Image: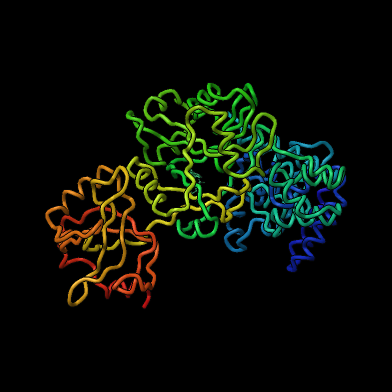
Length: 548
Ligand code: AMP
């Protein structure tokens, strides 16, 4: 396909507003792309490389402006290009408005300047630009880009300038490409969507759809070494998660950086959340993977920086390691990192994306002896709070709640993974009662009745039993002991003396407590030693927070 033909169609697509029409035009482009189908699928989205390949052209605006100026002849400087850009606002329009090609005699690349540029040739030259490294690479990039601009007609120049700067602006994203592949090659859109998820390569999917149709697409799977997009999380509450799924899988939310591990049985590659290759900066993770794994696998996890005592450090420390290109051994001595694997996408030749989370986690446990996140399944929000308290006191970020039955859906920010919403604010509430604990906590108070201040006393609003470690419970028991007024059965009446800081997810109206309100998911945060009951939060504040 000639690039001019592509540019003409891209121009039509850009001018079209209606989604369905755009899909039709992109489908027509795919049908005429011939052997350039893979490239065209990418270029129309403004990409040179497939989504799984984080290679960059590394062409910045100034290089592009210089190449344009050079192709526009001796009377145009990069400063002129920038001036036009400031008034026009968009590099494509600037490139289109310049009279390029005046430098025929000087064209450094491409034999026969008169020959039209093909999509394949463009692709090859852009890859040459991306591959230029080290001393002189800027000159190489400039020369190749100049050669391309020098041969471009105005419309080609518009899309070329935008493509190299990563701002294609024709309004075609992965969703449009998916629908257009389905339309062009008459295959179900869900099959195309699925194929894109597992391959992360629209070009390959388009070619497969054309060559072998639905059956061929269905055969596409994960490939070790080719990263897929990470599954993402939304925020949500523990109560909602349990109501929605009946039970929730709870695990620590680590404060680090996402890493996808690809081990092919011999070699390891690590990819960041942006799918960049971060193998070199994380040698200890590579060593860990190669020590632990004996079969090919794709794992998902979080890499966390740790101090000498093994306690987690803030995530910025990991990012610093990610960016490190030189002196990795020294960096490694300064800040160690470790992997917490939490998912298994592929094990020993088997794709596991559709297997339920719990099964994937079991496979993970089969593969690794250490470095696995602990997953607890519960239908009790109190357990969630307790796990969260343990995670927080170990220096982690909080907890993730996951649907135990859910599949792994690359790239989607669905409702199957939830980051537990942090408490919006906390309340200072008075302890007005307690209840003896059970089991190993039978000799301590296990639950505490909380009250808000009213003009003439206190009104109950809930009980807190969660978020309290055994050690802390013992301290609280001692603190409250002197204030016990009476006991009846397991119930203890406590005079208002101690104030707890309490987190919660929501305040709801409720007939259960004398205040008329209840806290959803109350969590013990700490004792407000600096506050006495006279300064505790009032019922009036609770009413306001509840929106009443
Ligand atoms: P956020 O970046 O706040 O949207 O939270 C989602 C991120 O938390 C994920 O992309 C992971 O990098 C990170 N994370 C930490 N621990 C876990 C875990 N156990 N499961 C899933 N994601 C986790």
